[in-house]
Length: 161
Length: 161
Length: 80
Length: 80
Image (cartoon, rainbow over the protein chains, first blue to last red):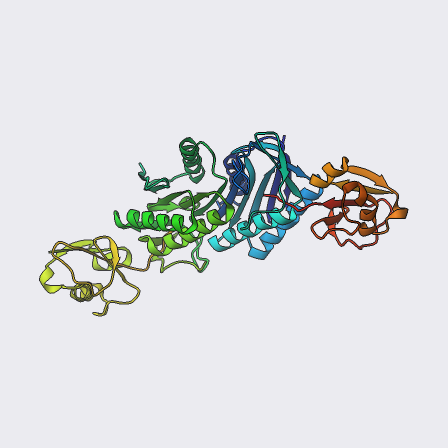
């Protein structure tokens, strides 16, 4: 079962979940939007989202079979929450949804979902892009690439933006 | 019924649809992603999307009850297609999905969906943001705001990014 | 003949969205605009905010028109 | 005692992800790193690419530690 947190500081909603098993971003998005509509009685005027999935090759084009994600239970969630709050306040967005996979993920499976609701497109898109970058650099996750021959490689930081 | 176009120039997929009745962005996204997976045998590593919906107020905070969208049948579709191709090539993205509402839309209903699939997050997000701006300025749509008292107002251009 | 099309606020002001106009009086979109400016309550000079499309492609206001062309006058666009 | 945690490649190299270490030998994260560098096959000086967290918050490597603190050494992060 996914570990889920709802934080309701002031009127802003931040929902974060870590998933040890495959998650379906669009299903999470639908549930999140329904919850937003139920809470605010109107759909957000602007929603920007990003979904990252397991690539079939590593940075050098070598074929991969799976990706393993290690995280720091406790700190990872706290960091995501802090980063989400910063993105929200910085861009005056309305709500954020973050889902992240942990454990071993197969090719094509979702790794991360970041979605931001706001009243206008600029804040929604900028907050979404900023939060994704912040997650990639400041939320304690480590990726181990698995190749067909069983060899593995820890990913050293992120691909350029 | 939505008017749909699939353009398959080279290996790049551009799918555009105009909707005289309400459309559900997440449902369209799901169908588009399934088609991409069926065609390429793998889910895109990076997907960025934006959904715009009818706001409950105009630029001055005046309450609205509906938004009416006029378009230029033929030119609007052609323009969206050209703009989508440009965004794809400019950012080396893999595929684009655009859906746009036409006719009268009620509060909270979806107006526009722009989604871009790519191999990395930067191209996906930049192409999505760029295409949305291009649509807002170069795809022939005109918005008429309807207020509760029955008065109307043509929107003069776009809210700042 | 030219097929002239108006949209949005222009269409409402004129009370029509489409008309046939003789090519003889309108060799360019600018000249064509002059023939309909009065009924639009607009200046004879094509305002900068109004864009022109010829045969469904954005176009310069001084391009030479051909018989049978479709010419549209587009108010400020607000898509997305 | 300090609760020391390692992740990713560091955890694999050390062969452990968590250990208790006496606070006496490690007044700061830097000093603590020196006590485990050998078994990590790493230099005694904390490499710049390794970040430090104290009680699950990013921290400076020279902060004074308190008994009972949780100190983690984090290899380069690759989230998202």
